[in-house]
Figure 1 (cartoon, rainbow over the protein chains, first blue to last red):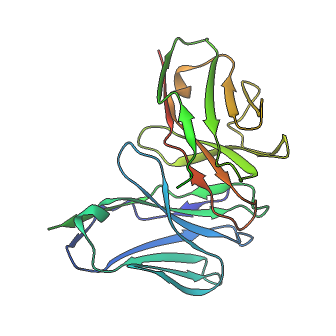
Figure 2: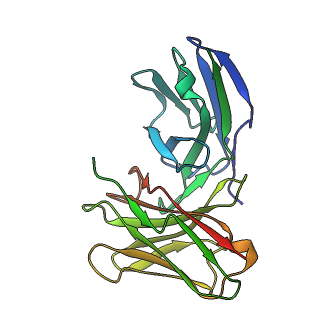
Length: 111
Length: 114
């Protein structure tokens, strides 16, 4: 059974701080890695994708991938109360035909 | 901005009844997916669909489930005989390609089986 593991949280950070979210995955054949944001009662919203080792930055978000350690992370700089949500890590299966999701980490940003 | 749209937003059905959930994927996307999320649990893959056939399905996607692309725009999920445990949010998603491409989700259909 291929798994994606995340700390469920909640992760609480003050406004303006850096939030660090982590994810590990079990399938070494996974090729693509994604971070989705999900507000309560809403659908997953894609915020970052990463395909190769290293860092990828997009605005306040930085995704980091280490395939040797099977580890993906998401950094959110200058956290805002509107960033309060559940962050889902998702990786593709080997065939690339399905996403396997973690349970998500709940982030709470206090003003 | 193009988006995946799903109807209805909420469906209540009696146990044993058939339901059809509808989705309109983003127009230039070629790969379509159904996922579900039981309340408080993680998002689970059901099925992926490309070129008018299923490319992958999970253990959840048993004989009670089927998918169809009845025309050039719609993508449907049918549950033949609903069970109480089918109650969940069902999300449709689409992507331009398969491997290594980003999937975008619709707003979901909340299915309640009573």
